[in-house]
Image (cartoon, rainbow, N blue to C red; front, side):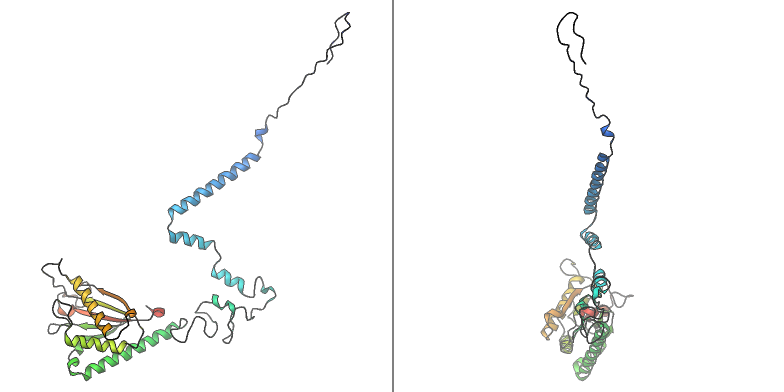
Length: 301
């Protein structure tokens, strides 16, 4: 804006420039920063949730969570049939896919459960089949019957061992075949209060060892006592005696030719599992149980 020059003066008018600055008020009212802040809060919430999960779960639970977000065997099988997608230009009967007849095994056969239909030897072998558990259990039961018959006949043919026939019991259990060697009021397998096998009892256990040596079944031995106590239970007690008698039986079986790797469990239970429950002091509660267990693939079946 130009002002008038003073009157009578030859002075050029002054020019005054007025600059007006317009500030960007209201910029903070935009929404971009809110989106960024929301993303940050969401990320922090996810982070703290992760930290809480790590602290509130054990290793097994964390493994289960990890497996939940990982590809599973079922997904692999679903995607492998007929290649990827809907066959993907391949055939479901291709030699590289699932085995679909007895004479054919495909590379996908590794993902087929052993109970499913696969090739001739999928998950199996000529011995100890993983596929037919019933056949393995039946073979074990047959071996048990053969062993029982051999021991019974051998005892009957030996005048000394024939007298122990009432002290030997064969009992079928869910775990296998249990052989109970029992005491009574007139006879004890071990010298009283010791782990020393009586002569005929040692011969009997040796006979059992010869009968089961050809099998491969795991063996469990459990010692039992009656409830009669000792003067100083810290020096000797029924727990120690039952365990020691089970170990003495194991040593006699090993001396009879049983491989060391076949012994699955050796334990003593003192008087906690009496056979004569109404009289825990009954001498018949003193016994050693030798159990031929079913083989691993059919254990407990």
